Length: 314
Image (cartoon, rainbow, N blue to C red):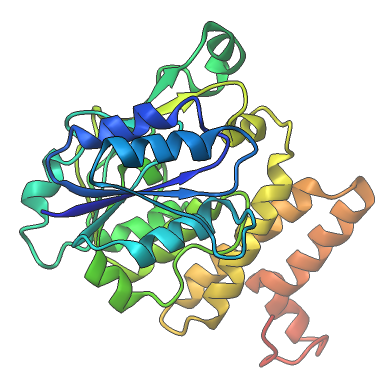
């Protein structure tokens, strides 16, 4: 296996050495691609030090000299990658020695397009642990059962009960499958760009479970990473979820191979976050609107009094 590890770097001067050296311990890794996203800290200097120290570490930046976020940086990494497989790592996280153990056997099957595993938690300081332990605890971020590829897409949508989650740090992809089956990789979102990617990825690619009951990588929790701000409501989670589900809804409505029941579920997920985030008066208006337009029993009753045309589609 020849794996390219793609690491977007922003404000991670304190952590990037650990991330890179955790990938270097994996003999399957043929290159580590750093995308330095115009950080205000000393991350660029640290990246150059790593390039000089390790032959397989490569450094790139966006051509226009602007900050583009993690998603667009990963896209640049995909463009520059030369390995047969792609893996991702956030600059403040790190791999464990077993990171690619499952991949070595699973990818011998040519029908396997991607493999996902479990993510653990590491607190970089006692202060971070005190602040965010109630959010993450010592729990694994993982998919709870071993599902066939066809179940991953509806499972992530919440249509398979308690499905669980996988992380960008634990995802490995066959590059050829990604390039051949998807036209758009990460979208230009500042929050939840990885979740949005996972939804579409699991629809187009065959994703298989790897190691689910123990971590293969660790989430680095500190006082200033984005996810802690969202989880602790410094950034309103409903607002960001509205944007996420709107992206998924817009994509799903245009994808002819997605069944109507799944499209309806996606619409309702988007609507639920809109309602949750709305002021009280608007909540009532939105609830009435969605009941009238999107629930078959009520809608069919209204058809009987010619309130709207039966062939009209919401």
